[in-house]
Amino acid sequence: KLYPCSKIYGDGNAVPRIVKFLKSIDMNEPLQKKFCFPPVKECISQDIDHILETQSALAVDLGGTNLRVAIIDMKGDIIKKYSRANPRTYEERIELIVKLCVEAASESVKLNCRILGVGISTGGRVNHNEGIVLHSTKLIQEWDSIDLRTPISDTLHLPVWVDNDGNCAALAERKFGHGKGVENFVTVITGTGIGGGIVHNNELIHGSMYCAAEFGHIMVSMDGPECMCGSKGCMEAYASGIALQREAKKLHDEDLLMVEGMSLKNEETISAVHLIQAAKLGSTEAQNVLRTAGCALGVGITNILHTMNPSLVILSGVLAAHYEGIVKEVIGQRALTSTQAVEIAVSALSEPALLGAASMVLDYATRRTY
Image 1 (spheres, one colour):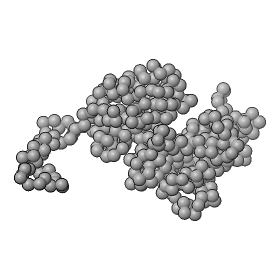
Image 2 (cartoon, one colour):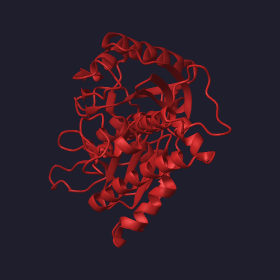
Image 3 (cartoon, one colour):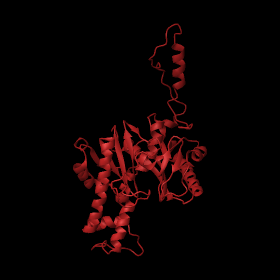
């Protein structure tokens, strides 16, 4: 169930090596505990396609707005990408995922890519062992208790891996980003919501109920703004894109958002972008909102440092660069001295969800541990 059958190609010499080894065993002597397969004469494989083709993965990213599929190679280069609006119903969504995956797999032949498997990144709580979405976020409707692995694996006859988008971001950093070669690090994603992933002793941490690294719901205040989870004072209720949009609308209603140099198009929705723009143009009110959000994020990350003691914290997502300075400031003021040496870095990856989804396939296909 963990790794459905797949065609992952070696060098074609495994059987000759095993046969030669078995013939070399002296049954009158105790079998050595340690041995190595004897070398065999190099031969030209009858199937050299796997040498000429680019080993690649199909990566799927299920976001609240868009559904994206990409062909990604071993270096993390996106060879081809497809993007569609994420359908609102389960049936339409599954149908579109399968359709795009089939289309991408067909296109991969023309692009000289060998697809080793499919990796899927999705919002919500995911049982990665079974490939099942247990419970989704409110941004993706009709997405609870969904078996994602079976319909895609049955259609494409490829192994399929599924995980939470925050975990995928951490996997992307481990393979392609700042986390490469780092034994203990965390990724904090600041986007529409707040999530993340934990890599401890080089292993991704899922938790007993598959809800580890729900950083957005670390409480930074006993009585703060209401969060989408139903609680109050969560980090997400202060520093997420939704939280900043809420504050931007409040300022706009009080005629405090718009400053010289800003303009709104007809029927344009107020968003976090307008708040950031106003802050850059000198709005004191907007700057105060961003500072409060950054402080909340910094306090939450300080709690993570005191719990996990990572050597690196990677800020990912569209808001990461805006929070870097204030997060470092808060850590310097509030964190234990022994944890202040932690490195804070902004992710350099443009597509962490897709790259993380691909890494699940590529790491296993190349015999690395996932």
